[in-house]
Image (cartoon, rainbow, N blue to C red):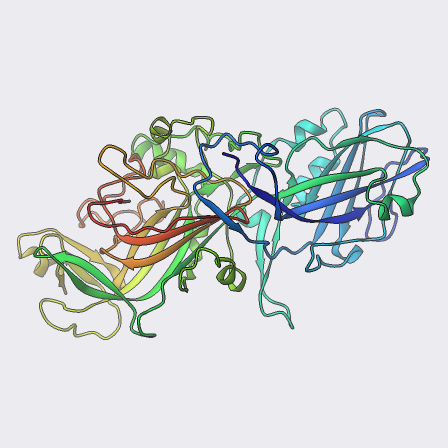
Length: 512
């Protein structure tokens, strides 16, 4: 299947000239007799046909619907590589040179670029480019430009994408996200006698149409509303062979961990990400401790409240638009050309796959057989065998069992951003893989808390296990599917295209 069934919204006509205004750089000049313009197509809502986009990843996993996004333009940088004369002309336009994208996705500054008839030019665009990357490109020769434009760069997601708080009178925020060419195929031979006005307004004369896409993906989470506002969400557990409520979740927040620290400025045709992440497969905690320095965990320093929302597969854009934050990630994937997921599974481990971390603050219904003496979440101990809460580890262990400490009433869950399937059997365990690629939104919807979570997340280097607790079931070298289940979730994936999943994790069904 193709990666995106749809990419781009209405064309944004954008022309350029060799400017010497105060906010524009000087660029190399040579004798010209014509004008050229660039049209940039931003990611959005126009579908490509099945044959116009191909992908190597094995499946789109039930794509559905789209989201236009809430992008803000800060800068537009255009590089024209003149292959005839071996020179590179560039212009970087600040937002003062044009208006913001309109509701129909159009941006039309009165600018054009001088050109010489008969010469061949290749065009490259960087939207909201990081200054260090733009500086590198501006210093690159025509001969080396394609290689440098397609090269890997060391950044973390927060350096190439950010959320902007609403500016009055707007009530929703915007996002400043770096975007680049989707491929290196944009070129033309300059036609003679094209005026500046024709180049800008005609749309066909000496015009290069360039598709761009965001270099990051987004992660987003919602939860089913409380049955009665303020009462929280029930946590269930099987006690004595009977499933019943044992606690109430009073607060849910989430963050994203194990993102990449590198990306290709222009994606690979196979969508693979740079090494060492691409080929890294942890075999034990020692190898992970060495290899995890190549992953980004800074997203785990900022948690966001999960939005209560009634799940609707056709309306994810509604909570997405009103979201008062954004969680960005640089893609992580492995063996993208492997179409047999049973084989690919060997390369996707818990220690090399991007995940949601959910923090749920809970109140026990009973502690040591009676209503708790505290009224706000506090530290309790969970009996491994009897599934009861205790005030002290000593009291729990006195019942002949191990005990887990939940500090300040916080339990944690780990969910993969893009699991291939939620249907699991003994002979076909899922999920097997969870690849992430640029320009998509990965959305998880929590339906219910079916089991207690964990006291810590060992996939976070800053959150090690407590040696007094039983062994944590999350091992870095394990495949994504394990023998433990904690949440009922619905997952929706949007590449600013929507892929949707709705499922319930039950014991012993699909488990993380």
